[in-house]
Image (cartoon, rainbow, N blue to C red; front, top):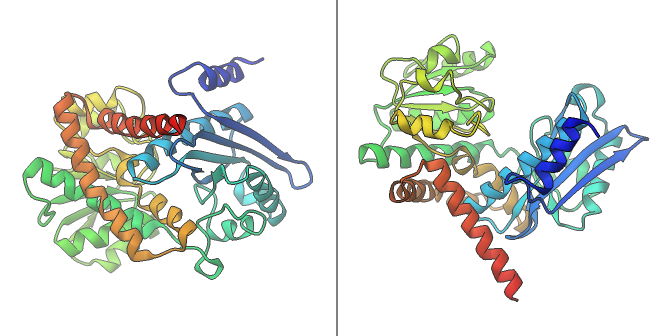
Length: 365
């Protein structure tokens, strides 16, 4: 056994990061499918989480990622108030070269074989059109197109939830939820980021953006000739003078040993997943007096949307649920203050309490 695979097994069975209920290794030689489905918890209900399609360097790396992502979904779903546990799937390979209809159908059959313990959706490398294919073999598929009974693109409600998190952060820190006149920096103006700009400009915030794709920035500036400016890169953005809120909306690990000391913003609230590069970063933020709105709390609008598909999608019902991210974020800040801990730790405690109580109730039945 290699050191990496031994590390994965230790994570699964022995570490605080483990505790997963089930991990399924999937292979279909005819289509070339190699996938991992990880179910962290079904205490609150069927595990729900997206399918990531990525060219992992090794199979062990793919398993480790699935474990980490599934665990994160348990916490996200618990804090979103959903009756769902956490799960995640990863398909190994470059989606631009190996993704085929046959492969997606094979994947759908594996998800279906779990009998509803895991409900899948889109993630990095998979899209609405892919979920439409998967759904042909698996009824436990969300994130489908409206033409196929789904809700379509979830970025609208994801950005709305982040906006509510920003409003809660402003209320906690400055005594008012208004973002009018605040200077807000957004790193990454793709599907979620560009909707976030719309919310902020509608309220009268000053927005500074950056993105590795020049065309994405160009679209934002063309749509907003006033009130929005662009900077060359994230390193410049986080050092911008007078920045009130920093919103990482691109890759994970945005908050690390290099970026946290350079931040000028008093609040971090963004859509990117896994923003904290490693344990301890949340304390570094707190020590600098920077208020951190936990990413998996404020970016939960998307999972709220896909979960609603299982009950017959209703946008207004979903938007009302996503609006509660404001109250949830305020509750996290209050718990952090009362317990003397960073908001990220407070969010974890609240999520763990909900999962523990649900599991205890199930055992008592």
